[in-house]
Image (cartoon, rainbow, N blue to C red):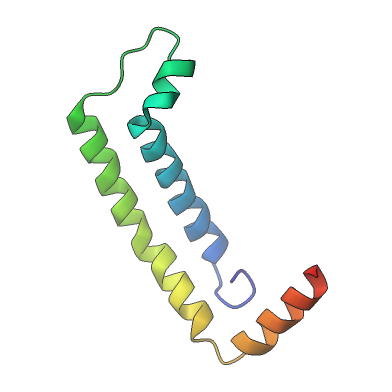
Length: 85
């Protein structure tokens, strides 16, 4: 993806950041093990983070689409997969 879709590393990083943040807000285990006395976020905070996650997917989804639809996709995928195996 990083080779075939310029800027995709930024879109992927932004989206992963938002997903990770949302996961931390909505995972009870995070609050049970690491809250250090901080109360879980209020529901509006979780909804706000969900919206930020959805918004950040637009750029990431486009990067995925650009990658899969790129004319060099098959050759690049094969080359990268072969080098990693």
